[in-house]
Length: 360
Ligand code: SF4
Image (cartoon, rainbow, N blue to C red; front, top):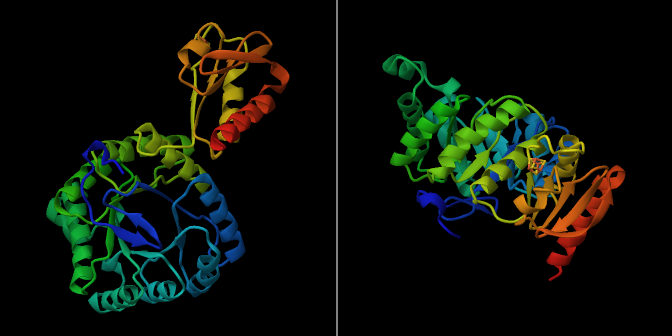
């Protein structure tokens, strides 16, 4: 695997068979928003996430019912499942025993070093890594007083303190995250942290917002770090359907050429030449094809004058005329499609070409 953007060398950590760090592909993660104690509902969402391309998912473990349900979830999940724990070390131990592929905790808030040792020992026996998850809201009061505010130095010191608690428990199977809801603070903090650690970094902007705002903040925060070679796994955090987090995460990686394969979708911004309802049509087509398992560049363009030319590197495309579209492949016109059935016909054509190419 190519080491893009001078990606910073990190050690490799195994999360339920998915390798994170080193030269491994940058992994896309998400988090379920189902009730974990509802194992069937959670598994249904995990399958949707996996189908969208999610590499690893995480579930909240707020109580023993959730920790118990994890047994069913982890035995049937198609992808590794991470247990997210706050405050109660007993939940972490139970989750580790019930098949969690990784535990996400903040060692600083589970009741002291004795509890950290208990969790570390159970994880070590089972080769389960721990993600030290620090964020701007969890920085200790003493560090805020020392630095006068939540700043990159305070967050890095907080994370390293938490990491040291695990290292003192003779545990180093660690991934670190150090997120903030501010893309700028996130960028500055990960930059500082990556200078002084070789543990793999889980990168993301936390509480980024609703789909539109969240994707922009994530693309700026996570995308900037990835372009600097920082980050081994990412999570786009959105107030919405977690499947959208996965699609956005993959789009960020693809925009930086960090993930190959799958559908690359392009569409024109429309202009005075557009005579078809391209905006609605492009959104509908994108929704229908974005998770198809074909390595294709697909273009949806507003006019036949410039569309096929502007998108001539697309494998397949649609360009708007008057009440009709032309279908083109690699810039060559193939046939005309009536406007009233354009989405159905075009999606079918994309699938046909994808199948043909996959069968090569
Ligand atoms: S492809 Fe045609 S409609 Fe779209 S922006 Fe270019 S000129 Fe305008």
